[in-house]
Length: 152
Image (cartoon, rainbow, N blue to C red):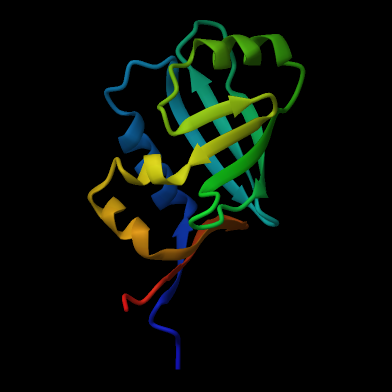
């Protein structure tokens, strides 16, 4: 019998990109489109189309470096790199972004503060019950694995 306190939620690429598109809509950022491509092995690529003229889409590669640990360290750490010879352009793009308070850049790492991110959504109140929350990938899928603590 499955454990009712555990969940594995596969999110297909098309649905993931639908959510991303809705999150970007109406925001004042230099990104026109973002296409997330989940790969096997806890990696994904993001094809970023910027609003600047004559700039081709940029491919950013991400690898999940460290999963959050609740409650001690609820930070998801991603290592990122730009594919191709676009380092100078990439640094210009990242320096021009106004990042939300739940995202921090630290060199070639992106740190996502899960509690601050969750606070943006009504379901964020569930975070106090989280024992495990991990992000994984497979070809064409983002996979969220979660386990909730049962209240005493």
